[in-house]
Image (cartoon, rainbow, N blue to C red; front, side):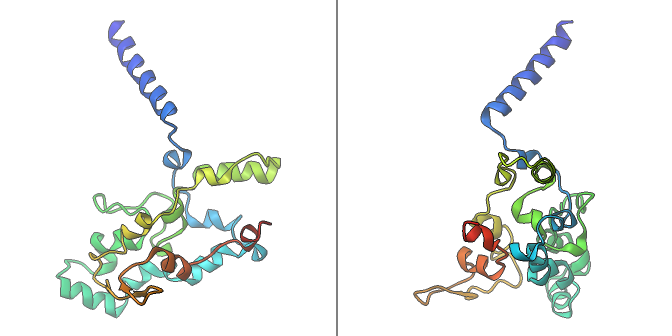
Length: 201
């Protein structure tokens, strides 16, 4: 009996610590796939975020690995496989790609490239709460609590000197300085904000 009670006590203690430390739901959430985001985040008067993302470079990230330029870079780097099949390339061109297992979560599609959940975090919990807001009209829910905070580090996991297309002078700052990456300027390039929120609506 003691052998059973002790592990149970340890598990209970760990769960208590996790709760006390306030692990957020974005950490516990699963990837849902970008098509799930489209349901709520594609209204024209709210910025049509899904369509805007689809029109920009992140959504095309996987397809760029099939381009002649990418294939040439792959050959120059001595890749064993074409870029679209190489884990060292796909890890930055597809959301949640795990290079060790050479796979993505079940609901993630390679062709979606760098999708919503790469920056905003796994969406399953966000979707559950979104349904409560939509169908139960529960306005007390903080939807932002289920989203990951986007920081410079979110981007520089991939936008860094390890990238074969890294350009140390890609961005020009206000003072004329050239840098390879600037968080604020990069955000403007992929902006898909909700105009209602920006105006306080």
